[in-house]
Length: 325
Image 1 (tube, rainbow, N blue to C red):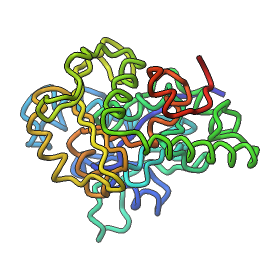
Image 2 (cartoon, helix red, strand yellow):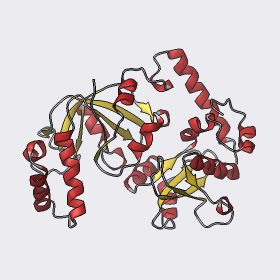
Image 3 (spheres, helix red, strand yellow):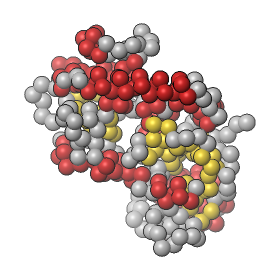
Image 4 (cartoon, rainbow, N blue to C red):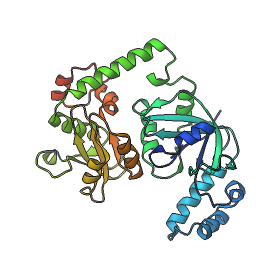
């Protein structure tokens, strides 16, 4: 069996996820776009229709972006393909299998959720915590900022996870093994919580460098205004971009949106990643997703810490078992 894998964003901050899960569907908006063209029109016909119908798109790039996403959703995505989406409030990923042709919504019309062109799905496996998601998939799912896109070359990996055959612990069928893994994660998080502010800044530096970033360590933390770490990527999960990171360790307290919004003003044209050791409020998650801000907390560093790629001073403090040298 072979097929394709797609990523979908179900509204800013995942606000459309509950609606979709109630009806076992995934979908996109663009309510006024003709469903017949989405299903069977040529790309040129759909482009012209989007240009005429969607007045807010004033640039060809915007029209082309919407056309491409609608065309992929209606005609390139096929029954049997997998679709993945991230639910930011729940911090987990769902793997779905497409089980219908493209349809246009004609039910529950009193609900104004912005899902109109849709496909029926079945859920291939239980939700997967985002920090447990297979490494090759995580960046492909969280990175793109559009409504619908293809995750190239991922069908075999996703199919293994869906069938419970992934080498990762998340999909392991042995309940004892899964329980032991979750206990180990809890241990890692507790010890990571005990690190101090300075430790966390350097942990984040090591995390970014492990993914291929170039970080000038002379400019980390200290008296720098607002931004604690600047990372430049030439490849890897974060793409060919500059990322600026703020690191906060408020003992036992989650970071709320106003704090993130304040710091966002100082980021400039770089991408922004906010690290809060003790997590984020629901409002912070939803608004950050809408603003394309990446959020990380202690639990997101578990697999990295178990990989042993932090500097020796931090390894000695954490005293964790290491999976790989």
